[in-house]
Length: 345
Image (cartoon, rainbow, N blue to C red; front, top):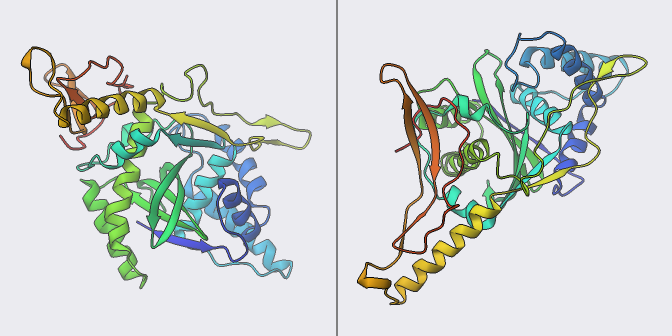
């Protein structure tokens, strides 16, 4: 696990585009260089997983070349940390799509209240709808500052291990947190995160790491399994391809951010269920003398299918289920089937 933060003394960060601008000022010309690198990267098919945007060492080499050029030009070349490379990979992946994911408020609250434990499902996380997603995180906090949102991408670490890179878009700075995906559980990944910061002599922010990061992971897992419920269902995120110019082939940034509303139908169904629950608590009896309506707690559930010898594990988020209340046909989501490890019961 690695962490690093880049402060911004001039702007109060709010729109995610400002994050790109801040890193662009710190590392001038880095985005066009990574655009060209991505075009070269995709020209070698099947060498890397399709959900990776760029490999770690290629980006580190590109960054070294940029800083050396800045030194030769007499510019003040900033130092960078290991996590800076992952932050640049994550934001360069977001730059070409610029998807902003805004959850229905009721669904958002239900998801962050759903505990996540056990082994992180790498296969499921690789199904993010874009290389890098940006999730708005209203009323969440990190290290005492408002957390406006997070960028998230699955890729590789310096040692080649798979990782989940989370870039924290805090009020006045960007913070990078990397969770190793080669650990037996989320708790083990969080332990490594805390130990790394202690060894680096930094404030470990242990409460934030152990409390906030699992909530973010829960949002990401839902986004992977609920890609069909984005916007109004008529269009979905796409991944652009490099374009050829007179000089070279390169990626180009999206023209503007695109907002994707997530789980609007699910959120409305949850609100109806909560209303039934409140009516039951107020003393309203259901028909035929059956028990009052109530809500069964949401949880992550692993479902086995296929042969007994080689079962396929799929992960499903079971929302707060209304019991003895109005039947809500659309409450249980459609899940994209992928192989996944246990994430709770």
